[in-house]
View 1 (cartoon, rainbow, N blue to C red):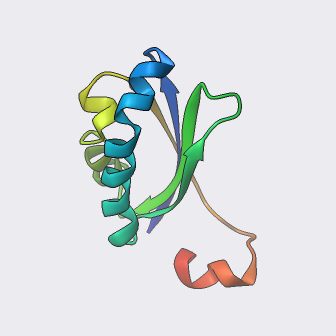
View 2: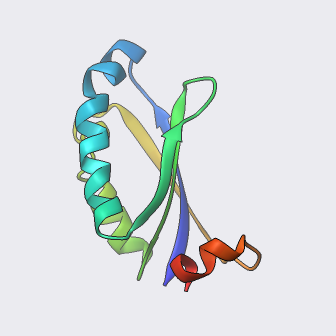
Length: 97
């Protein structure tokens, strides 16, 4: 399993982001339910967001995120950073595998 930090950068006015955030979070819930996503949230200041996830490949997680309403509505760009977790809190070991 590969692990990813995904950084979203908003490309639209915050009012457009606010109008789509419920739909965006409902979409992300599918990733949480599938065990693909670990956590997500907006950056401070609110210029984008950060998501931690895992998948068998970059292509799989990228294809999933292409369906995000923020992407479909051209409200954000995405940066994917693959990383290898080597240190973590004990409660994370099952999720990291």
